[in-house]
Image 1 (cartoon, helix red, strand yellow):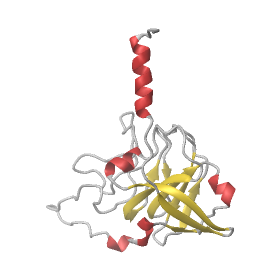
Image 2: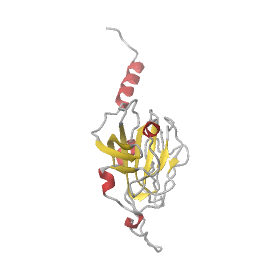
Image 3: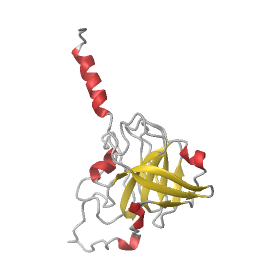
Image 4: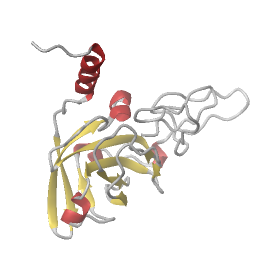
Length: 205
């Protein structure tokens, strides 16, 4: 049996451990001018799932993807850090229509992609699917997550006064997107603001 340097073995094991096992999928339908387009998507809704997203994947079945549940409804941001496959991103408005599309995102890029308007979800598909199926802004998206619609009116009012307590956690009242800055910004998935005066909008994905 041929021996290998220890560092080479460790590097190989690390690479293997980074390959994420696909989770069960749920059906997602996009109603386009060309008819219904069906995808199978994994769901990201816990803080850990939102942070991880599709990071470290080296491939994904053609008609698969992932839907990120954004609650409460708010503007949000995505990035491609540690994401090895190019993606098409669909930002889904509270009425379940596509409000913004970003095609062919650059793998491993740390540039932020910020939604112009509040969104209820973000869908990530293999790059090229938007052009392949003619998906456009205004197309309707059907998925279980979107059947429970929320609006900005669902967000509790911000506390007022000098003794007000700032809400914390991923479901705290929305205050707009949180943009990470500096070399020590979180290196994987959503950026969770820290400190007593951090914005209460929850993670930037």
